[in-house]
Structures are given as structure tokens and as C-alpha cells.
Image (cartoon, rainbow, N blue to C red; front, side, top):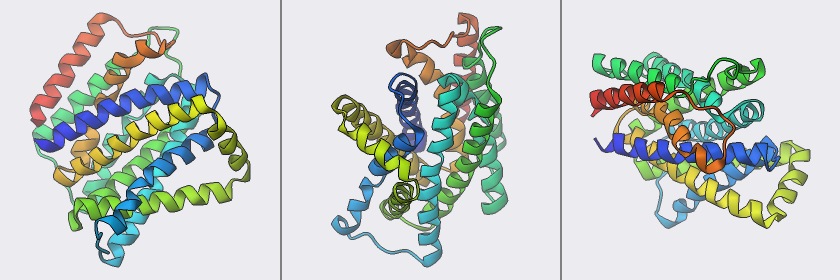
Amino acid sequence: MTWLLLTLVATTLWGFTNLIDSDLLERQRQDPNVLTFVTGLFGSIPVLLIPLLNIAAPSPPIVVAALLGGAVGLFVYWPYYKALEKTHTANVILLWNLAPVLVVFSTWLFLGEQLAVKEYIAMIFLIASSFLTSYQPTGSHHIPAVAVGWMLLASLTTAIEFTLLEYIFRHTSILDGIAWVSVGVLIATITLLLAVPPARRQITMALKNTRLRKRFVLNELLDLTASLLRMGAIRLGSAGLVSTVSGLQPLIVLLFSPLFKSKQTPPSRILILIAVALGMVGLGLLA
């Protein structure tokens, strides 16, 4: 199951970048516009593949879907960063559990994708694992309504992005798809720079900071690698399954959080053990 391995590696990388994102917003006081621009800048790197690897131009509908997929994929980050400004990383990932459900529904509705019964059961186990991992003790579990709103938007746009990626990779090769999606990311990044004048000054100031530049490079290279692995997983598997396995992200966040001196209160050991067991059962059903 190559798609499963790719998804697990991507999910691990994203769990790590979630904590770096939170640190940049909470301690480094970076604006979501700046982080979205930097994400788009690195996400545009595969554009270089077009002249180097003789990337083919697919049919117009595929090109349009790829450009939209890249643009929507970048836009997902903005409400995600806005939510991180308002609540803990684990809460943000917890709210993102709605995304797999929306992805499965969207790919079924628009592309006719059907999962097997055991795959639906696996999705339930993985989402349950994610909820338990993100559980906060009484008194610390309040999530601001505005953060819920931002993550609902992020989940909806994630479903749109995954549906477009599923459509693209059904009709084109992995390299062609990645290259054209990255063109969409580049267009969206340039649009952000031109359409939001205050962001240009914020971006310039942030990039002048040597310490921040190093953090940006590490974070965005990990993010880009995870994105490429995810697209490869969708090409080999399906958007619904890839989105479902990504539900293990809160467990990764919990694992790495001590490295970032996170203020988040972890769940009890019993809940963690139950969450790990549910996650293992879910993965076992998909393997």
C-alpha cells in the first residue's frame, strides 16, 4: 500500500509544521498574510519542472481544474492560520476532522467515488482517535466561536481542493498534475501580493529577519514535501482515503509538542492509549 505509506509520512511532516506554524503566530507574531505568502512561494517551486521535464499540457478542463486546485489549496492556509491565532494547535486539528467527511461526500457526489464498507469503518476509527487525542480536560477545552468558523471554512475548501486533485490525477500523470497545480499556487501567491497592499510591507519586514527566514525555509520545505507526497498518494489511492488517514495528525502534534514547549494540556494516558489503539485498528483496516 504505497499510497498509505506516502500519506503517513506526509501526515507526520504536517504534524511537525503545525507546531512551527503555531510558534510563528503565537511567539513570533507573524501575520497570516505573511505565512500564506511564504507557503505559496515555496509551493510554487514545482513550476520549475515545466521547462526541465518537458511537462505536457493536458486538456483545457484539466488545466482549469489544476489552476483552481492550486489556488484553493493555498487559500486553505489562510483560515487555518487565522484559527491558530485564536486557539491551540490541537484544537485546530480537531476541528479539521470535519474535512475527511466533507472530502468523502464531495468526491462521491461529484466524481462517483465509492469507498468499501471497511474503509468507512476505518474512517470512523481514525476520526475517533483524532478526537480523543485532541481532548482537553475540563476547563481548558473551550474553543472560540471564531476559530470554529475559520476551521469550518478551511474544512470546506480542503474538500474542494481534494475533489479537484482527485479529478486531475484521474486524467493526467503525477508530474504533469503537480506542475500545473503549482502554477495555480503561483498565480494565487502573486494575486495575494498585489491585492493586499499591507501584506507587502509585512512580508518584506519578515523576510529581512535572518532567524525567521531560517524558520520559514525549514517549515515550508517540510510543508512542500508533505504536499507532494499527498498528491502522489491521491494519484495512487484516492482523495477520500488520503484525507481519512490524515486524521492521525493530532497524534503527531501531541508527539512533537514537547519540543515546542506547548501550553496545551495533554489528555490522560488512558485516552492516549485508546486513541493509539483506535488509530492502529483504522490503519489495519486500510492496509
